[in-house]
Image 1 (cartoon, rainbow, N blue to C red):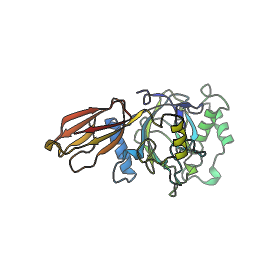
Image 2 (cartoon, rainbow, N blue to C red):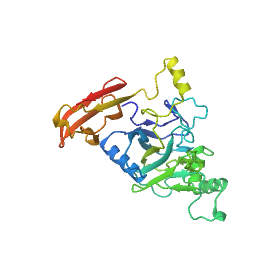
Image 3 (cartoon, rainbow, N blue to C red):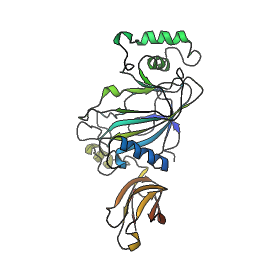
Length: 316
C-alpha cells in the first residue's frame, strides 16, 4: 500500500515529514507471514508471556544506499506540548516506545560505514585516556581519504562517520541484532539511547529491520491513552482521527455452528488467535483489502476481506 511501500524515510509522530538529516529509505511489513514470525520472536525475547499486537510497532524495513544515513535521534516520541491525540507521556499515564530491536540483514566490512552509532557511548572496554574527540576523529578521517569525493567536507554526514569511528558503534552483520531501551523503569526517557545510522560509504547497500515495543497500548488501538483536549478539538473541527488508514475489525464466534467450536483465525497463513466457542472476540487493527481466514482442523472454512468502514464486525 502507499503507506507501507519503500520510499524516502520520514520523521515525526504523525504525517509524512521529510528531514534533510534522514536520507535513508523505509517501508513497513506489519502483517506478513515472515513479519509476524519475527515480531512474535522479538516480543518473546523481550520477555512478554503473550503476544499483543497493540504493543508492537513495525516491522520497519530500512535501506541505506551509498552516502545515506540518519542523524542521531531518539526512538521515544516527544510531544511536549501535547499536540497529538495520543498521550506519549510514558512517565505519566501515556504510552511510548520503550525498546528497539534492530535486525541487520546485510554484511558491511570495517570502513564501509553503516554502523549504528550511540552518540553518548564510548567503545566497550576503552580507557578514558584513549577516547578520541570529534575534532581529532575528523582529522583522522580526512587523512585516511576514505570519504574523499563521497561526502562533503564539514557536512553532518562527514561528522557522523568520524563519530562512528570514535564512539560506540555496531557494524552491520546479517547474524547480528541490537537491543536498546528508550525508557527508564519509571517511564521517563533515557537520553543515553540517542542513536543514529552512519552513512554508508561503499556501493553495497545496508538493509535492516526494526521492531519498536511499547510500554502500553500504542496509538490507533482501542484503549490507548489520549490527550482528551486534542480529541475534542479535532472532533469539533471535524478532523479525521489518527491512523485514518487503519481499520478496526472484531471477529466474533456466535456459537451457533457446531463445526466452529474449535475455530482459529489466521492472517493469510499466520496464526493469529483461537476463535472458538470458549474464546472472547478478537479485536484487530488491520487495513482495507487484508484477508483473514477461519481454519478448522487446518482447513480454511471461511474467509473475510476488510472493507472501507473504520470499524467492522465479522461473525461465524
